[in-house]
Amino acid sequence: MKYKRILLKLSGESLMGKQSYGIDADMLAQYAEEVKAVVEAGVEVAIVIGGGNIYRGVQGAQGGVVDRATGDYMGMLATMINAMALQGAFEKAGMTTRLLSAIKMEQISEPFIRRRAMRHLEKGRVAIFGAGTGNPYFTTDTAASLRAVEIEADVVIKGTRVDGIYDKDPEKYSDAIKYDQISFKKVYEMGLEVMDLTAITLCQENRKPIVVFDMNTPGNLLKLVKGDAVGTTVSE
Image: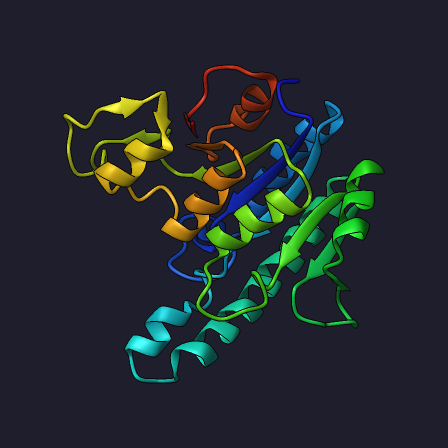
C-alpha cells in the first residue's frame, strides 16, 4: 500500500445520491463497501463527513434565518447525523467503528481526543470524526486537514463526483484540462476550488498531500491507496 493511514473527506451532498435532500441508503452501502475493501487491505481509515445534504450554515446566515455562528453550529449537528448514518452502514458491512465528536455528545459519541483516535486506528477501527472542528467559521474541509495533521495521516483524500482537478469546471466546459499532479502554489495562483484556503494552507504548512478523486467509481479508493494513478495529487 502506498498509504498506511488515510483521512477520507466526504461531502454531505455525496450521501444524497440521486435524491435532492437527505441520505440515500444505496450510497451509504456503496461507500461502506469501498471503505471495507481498503480496511481489509490493512489501511487505517479516518473519515470526516460534511453536512450540506441537511443544513449548510452559510446558506442559513445568508437567508437571514440565523447568524453565521449559530448556522455553523447547526451545520455541525448535521454532520453528526451523517456520521451516525455512516457508522451504522459500516458496522452493518462488518467493520468496527468509533464515532468521535468535536462537540460533547456523550450519549452517541466519544469526545475527540487525539491519542484515543490514533489508538482506534492502530486497532483497525474506522474512526469517524463529526461536528467539524467544533468551532464556527471553519469548514469541514478545514476539519479534515486539521484531523489529518493531528492523527499523522499520510494523505488527505477528498472524494468527489469528479475524477480529479481541472483548470475549469469539466461539467460545464468540454475543453477542461485535467491535472494528474499540481502544486499548492499553482492551486493558489489559479484560484482552483479544491478545498477552502484555510484547509489547503494547513496541508501545505504540514507537508500533507491532498488527493482529489471520484469516490463514486467502484474500486477507485482501493486503487488510490495502492498507488495507482487515480485522481489528482496536490503537493509541494
